[in-house]
Amino acid sequence: MSPRVLLATLMAAAATLAPTSATAAPRLNDTGIDFCIDADGEFIDCHHTGQDATFGRDVAHPRDADGRLGFRFTRLCNSGERAGEGSCPAQPQPGDAPDEWGCTRDEVTHLLWETKTASGHRAGSRAYTFYSPEYDPDGQYGGPDDLTGFLASVNEAGLCGSHEWRLPRPTELMGLVDMAVIIPPAVDERFFPHTQANFYWGAGRALGFQLEKELAWGSDFFFGLGAISAQFRSGARPVRLVHGDVPGGKRFVLSPDQQEVTDRQTGLTWRRCVEGRTFDGGRCVGTPLVQPWLKTLAHARREARDSGVAWRLPNVKELASLLDHERREHIDLRAFPGANADVLWTSSSFPTDPTPRCVSFPDGADFACSQGVGGFGARLMRDRD
Image (cartoon, rainbow, N blue to C red; front, side, top):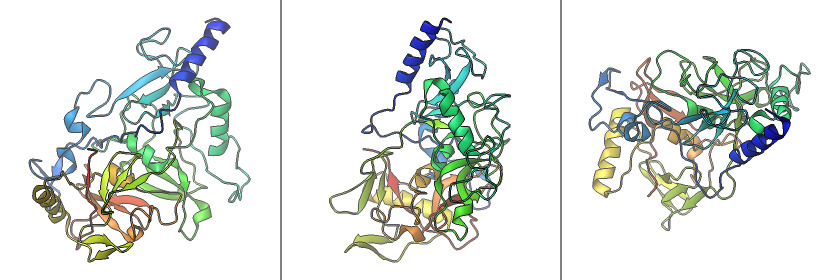
């Protein structure tokens, strides 16, 4: 490829990578969960359960060619061309040359992801510390074995024609996870080769923790299946960079009666208070409804039936989308008063140890929650109108 043609192709790539309009709400990936469980953790028929597998893109768009059960991915060569177009082969190999596979575009969220290689600078086997200017006891911040140095080098090289790669938020990383995977890594390796079955670094500060300067967030591609947690910065972990704007502007919009909140980033509408409480006088009042998981799912179905509104228990990616790791409370308390104290059920569960998943806003994390405990609360939601 001549220098002039290469320049023209990279300019086209830059146009391809241009951020989408901030007014167009990016959608969330579904979980890929296609199973349901009972109180004993046994797999059951999903009919009328209200569990994760009964709704969403993985039900409405189950084809497998470009991503399993609702996921939709496109391979892009470093030239910016799609696989099978121009000089980009139909089955490109990961690498740094213009006609090699450099990035994967998520057609649901509109984010562009770094494609890892078998060896070299962006090898999927590599791992990095994640020091910061405030916490750098070993003097590695910005070095080649630290995440900050790796990010700077990728932007300098201009992967896929862009110099604006960034560290993904933990919820963005979780968005790639196929939560029905039994053998890790929990991702479609046809589109994300050389992925480690490991915890991956994400953006955000571990505010509210005793050792917050020493911790950083991320998400798990091992048996945690996307579980978000904070880990020590000194530990070497893999990283996958992302390209795309973090949406700005006013995120949450209140309904006229102030009982509901619409998230402009996802298009989802939430009850402002957890079940059992209502918004009154600037706060949520009443006693939270705390129940076992299956009773909570039944409550959500009754609410939908009695109100005529399609309320449901959110899946784990939907509920985790409310996590904000730049806030000490891990959620916007103006939109959701008192929510920093909530541990809430989701409609999702794990395939390897069939247990429901919940999101803990006091910790900013998500994990498995035993059905044997007294129960947790719930925040119902509905899809965009």
